[in-house]
Image (cartoon, rainbow, N blue to C red):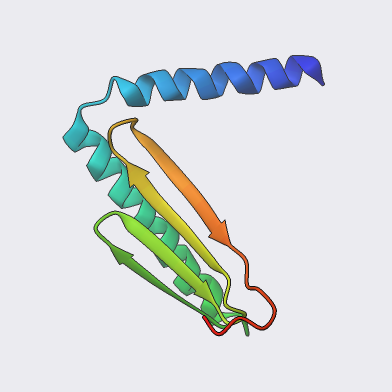
Length: 96
């Protein structure tokens, strides 16, 4: 298990190093293509599911809003050449 963790760390480190060395415009294009693919995958999954969620993609920020009020945000962080994911769970009694 430790060897597997070390291999994953090396792979992640290598990808991070590659992304940091990437030209800004190349990173933005790759990140936007990835966000587009996530949106297409959501649409495909929703066609065969009874899940109720809405999603939008604007300026490199993909927002997924679930029927229970929870929200997932995936965005590109250009300075670090990273994709970030944040989640907000629904709170009981919330009127959001």
